Length: 207
Image (cartoon, rainbow, N blue to C red; front, side):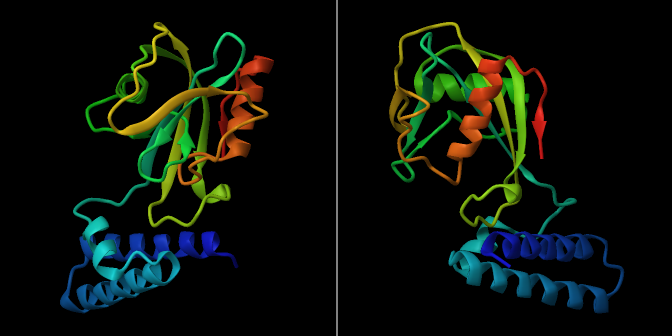
């Protein structure tokens, strides 16, 4: 079993513990689910190296039914079919523009906002291309359980004005991609999205 598979099982274990604590009816159940949650936090620390204190901050005891986090991203091609990427300030590597889904915004509204903030471009999200489940792809281990939605976007403006929270914004040829921020996007995923656009494939890829 690799780390990604183990991480998925640990995340499921923590979710079971949090759900159990939500609905526990007696002190015995509370004690057992609390212990189960603590074990899952210890295991997360062993796999990710985040530290138990950090993990407890990232994952406070759930007040509602635990669900997956949603990451929303957009792919935009230039007239010569180059791919727009933003260089992340967190790790200095490149990704499709986007980020965590914000409460109060639709998925399309998130993409419009993220493109404006990161690249200065106004875009129209035209089509949902894919819904990736991160556990189904070789991303680095991460304590969150994540679904990743990617939209094909059309630019309504052309002047790039990088945002304060990214280091750079550039177009890249599919055969000459820079080092990618693999927490956020993989080369294989970009290639799948690129092929769908060029081939006119209107189906939605979903894991």
